[in-house]
Length: 88
Image (cartoon, rainbow, N blue to C red; front, side, top):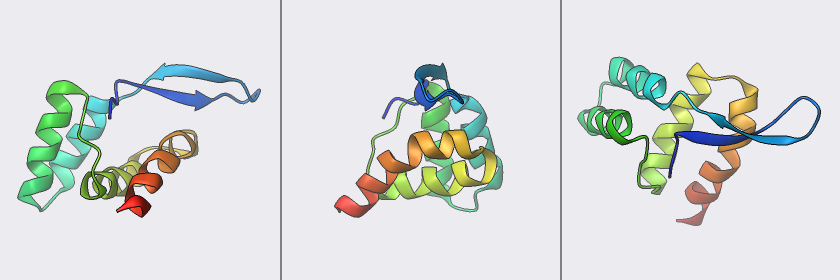
C-alpha cells in the first residue's frame, strides 16, 4: 500500500489526491509502540512510504491512524484497511 498520497473527499464532495504525512505516522508509531514488530514496521514505512497490506499491517495502521489523524483521513483509509482486515 502506497501511503505517500491518499485520495480524500473535499468539503465540496469532490475527490483529490493529497500528500499524506506517512513519515509523521511512522514516527508516531515508532515513539508509541511497545512491540518490536511494530517498531520495524514503522522503520519500513518511514523509509519507503509503502507497506505490504496484510491483515496485521492493516490493524496496525488503523490503530495509529485513529489516534493521530482526523476524520477526513479515516474516511479515506479505513474502508481500504477494513476490507483487508475482513478479507482474511
